[in-house]
Length: 157
Image (cartoon, rainbow, N blue to C red; front, side, top):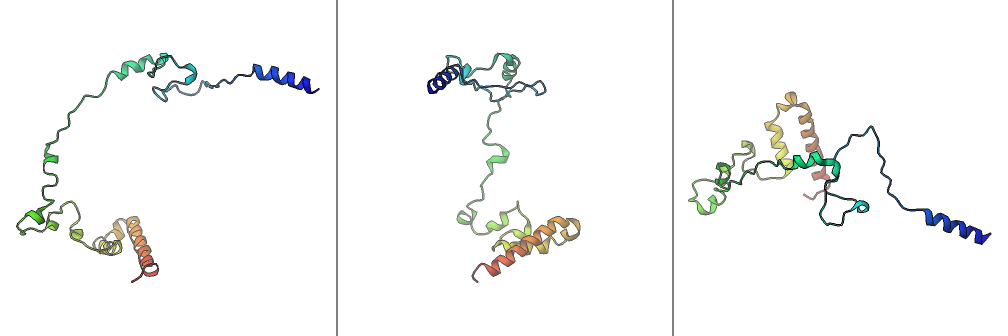
């Protein structure tokens, strides 16, 4: 009986081959996936990735690349970037660097403190949020209460 089982296993194992099953469904749309990748089962002898033959329309579309725009290093936006970075060292002292901060709220210019103190100041300046933006006001108060508890319970004074 043992020899019979071995003989059957040899016949069955010799006929089994590993084939990757690709399910084709009629209701799925055909779209390009993994562009340039070729499965090793169907690979050509050359080393470059190839577009499958059924994507001929895509080859035409790849020729129309967007027009090249050269990088303009001295545009109006970039040429004055960082011009006042060393005004406190190289300047005559008539202007303070805090006065140059124009891209932030005026109540926050020159502010020194932790997040809790900053949020308390923000709460004073944006008290109208209580009626105009109630959700933002609630999140602001929630963060203040969290920091209040954290600073009083978890940190040394």
